[in-house]
Image 1 (cartoon, rainbow, N blue to C red):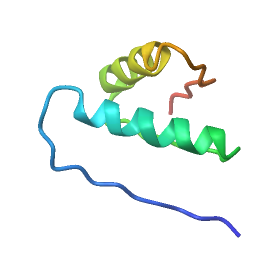
Image 2: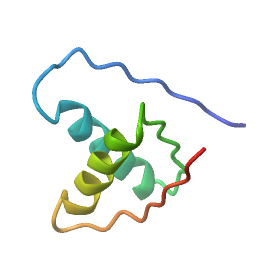
Image 3: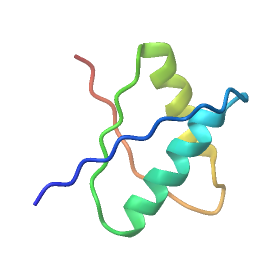
Length: 68
């Protein structure tokens, strides 16, 4: 059965959303789960992509982008 989770963050700190996304995607990857992340625009997607490729430094998270 497919499970869908939604996360809302009220933390307005710089990179808070990227930190939460990285933590959740890394945990899902370790559990061999698929993850779909919807960005509001191309710039947010680019920033998230940069963040996921750089944090944490000791792990690898395969990812790709698809534009609508």
